[in-house]
Image (cartoon, rainbow, N blue to C red):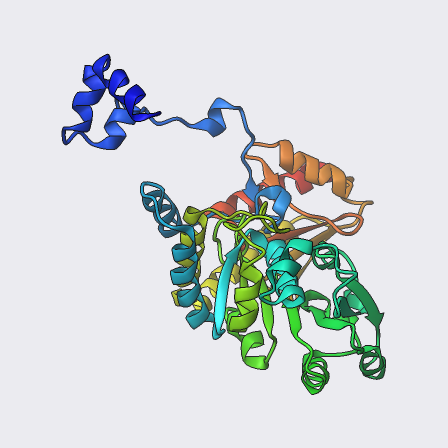
Length: 405
């Protein structure tokens, strides 16, 4: 409003005008009476379930701890300059993760995009505005192992960078040219590649090529938060909403100070770039820091023993049924937690894996599990609430017994 309009408005609005000159809390003016608590999950009729499957995006990943929710709630009541939040939080996260700098991103995918963008543009704002049109860039290629060239490579190619696929160390050395901007390592696919971390880094450093590693779901162990920074990777990308239990839409970009600074040019709050839509609000930035701070301080040995005990409860209940076999495994890299495979003889237990999943899903309470083989379900426990392992054990046993009758 213009000043004249504003004065006219207040002349007809004595109550509003009086409020401005009093000590009535701002939130009281806006909200009026205190709103009653609403349970939107129940109100909208949304199905909740016991998560015995894992931190899958489609299952909304993980549940945030109270400390994280408190950080989100308290920070939502005040205005703060966005860059200041990222600056302060970035310093704290960098110290925890042994990196020169850090940025909270809109998930690990966003970290991959922004990290790659930073490598391609440096601090050149003209290049930032050009992405993903990189044909004119002197360096616009990323080298990737054949076993790593799937799925998440699309995050990098969002920037316009062009993948160059190789398999051996010799091929990698020959593939490096004046067009090489970056070397990409997908950690969960380490066993599918012929070049492991140290050789990969040695070749990169020898040729002065930046390296980026994706360790999205590769925590625990907690040491992985700093392992790859200490090892010498220039950029490390992490998912925040899995085992760390930060906001699902948050992630971490860790790495060299100059590369993080360059990545921020393609990130909010700036516009005219490829990352403007990858917004992570101040509440999520602070929530991510609260989650990380809590995670690194917790007793991980105690937590592991708890997981093993939960697996044992479910395994013992399943093994009571004739024709059922079980196997406890620990994935070597991603989702590195105790897991349980339950299989059955279809001649004894007349049930398919899909039928078993559906019966658990539609039961009360609803339970989600995964399956990768016939007559087999896979259960993880690291997303269970205390005591839910008993519920899962009873329900699995019930369905196996019922199908055996």
